[in-house]
Amino acid sequence: TGGNVSMQEYMDTEPEFRSILLNIVFNGTNVSLVTGSVTLNTAELSYSPSGLRWFRMREAARGAPFNYPTADQSRPVDEILLSCASCDDNENPCSFGGKCLDDSTCACVNGGSGALCKVPPTGDGRCNPYFNNEVYGWDGGDCCGGTCRKPECGLGGLSVPFGIESYYEQDASTDVLSVLGYGSCKDPSMAPLTLELKDFDVFNKTEWYSILGNEDGDPFCSTAAINVRCNGVTYLYFPQYILNNESDCGRSFTETIHVPFGSQCELSTNIPCFGPYCLNHTISVYYGDDTSSPPIRSGNTGDESRLSFGVPSECLTDVLRNYSSSIFDLSTHQGQAASSLSNDGISEFLCSEGPNLVLERYALTVLNASVHFKSSNWEPYQCHGWGIPAVKTTCTNFSVTSLVLEPDAVSQVGTIPTELFLLSNLQELVLRSNNFTSTIPTEIGLLTSLESLELWENGLSGTIPSEIGMSRLSALALSTNELTGTIPTELGLLSSLSGIFLDENALTGPIPSELGALPLASLLVPENNLSGTIPTELGATSIHTLTLHSNPNLSGTLPTELGNLKSLVTLVVIKTKVTGQIPSELGLLSSSLVNLKLWLNQFSVSITSA
Image (tube, rainbow, N blue to C red):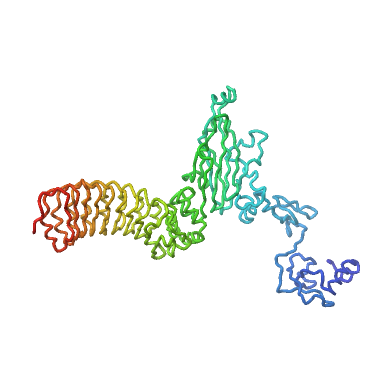
């Protein structure tokens, strides 16, 4: 009651209060919340509920005669805190920059409202610069398209669209609300994308005259109407705009937008046409807030009215974009893989644990996107059943060391992706008897731990990459493909290589003499178009199987050094141009040599006993 007025005196002068108080005393009704007790004549008692803690009423107090209701200390209501609505610049100031007036009320600014201006305008659909910070949740999400939830969102959100200063000055009918965007979006959880317009077609005087009959018409160009939508939400709408200054037609214009990570987006355009003439230009999309990196999508408005792209989850974007800009292009295997990983429930966790784990999963998913394995088991971790039964992986220390694709395990023709080099600890790669086409990627040489490579019975073309000499191969099986070119001399650098299987291809050139320095056990190169002579250096190896048949341009003589191959079991030289005598030294191999086939050549004598 304030002052020194007793409760009895106040009740005598305020009959309504007396009635309410008696109702409380006798029935405990009309009470929802009760403060904790306070002590009379102390600093704690300020004759105001301001700052006091509130509780639910103790149930036992209801109906108890001559008892005030008491607080149930076990049931606090801490979300309720009453405060004084009268402002004071020192003790009770107005919020958000509001000014305390002489009558103790607040003149609110910056969109604040309510008592002491404490109600912020967050979440009303219009971006307020004062609240556009992390403390206020970026104005309750109003400043970004991915978080704004009102019909007004984005209207008039670009003050200078695409940096075109004259946009709102061109004519009086231009409405600020005709542009939709979020130029003030600062939320760091959003992905920045920069759009660039350039290479404008210019409508020249001759064309202008033929259409409008105005001989003095100045050349001009125009932007297309541009609409960017991601996951059903519009993040930018910019109508067609005529650039009357010819010098502007040689410029580029950019605008940065922000969309949620994990989005799938589409940029659509509508170009202006004047009679038979349409004003096209190039439009490109970049990841980031500038155009310094390669574009993630680009096209001419006359050729492509729609550009689709995706933005992977934030961690995946940070890791994968260092390896390929194609992760944003949903028409590529890389983009499809990145989009799949963003929604598979495990890749984001692997990404946060370490980039190598998710890089391996990305490489496997790109491989699957290329040929579509006959499996639907993509949820497990790659070391725990991923891709079975089509794929078998073996791991060491949570890293893939063996990748074996079962024969006939794919449902469409595809390529071996370069991303396989991301399996940095891979020791065995088996992709035999499937529908892989195109070339063997040179990046295969980056698999420096690779020991066994089996790609036979596919439709691979092109050459054997010389970079393969950078690995640790012990077995190379590329049989039954369509490979051309020569056998790389770099194979001679593979000090552990014991098996080379290159039969049934279209290889040309000589058999490299450098192979003689290897611990070869098997060299199979039949049914190619090899030329030159059989290297004498092969006699220094440990070969037990040497097949050279059906190479019609292979010439020279059989080296006598082949008699040094004490472990030779099979020697096949058929359908070649090899001439001369059959070395008698082959007779020294009678204890090991089981299969000797030398017909359809141009030998001059028969073998003699040694």
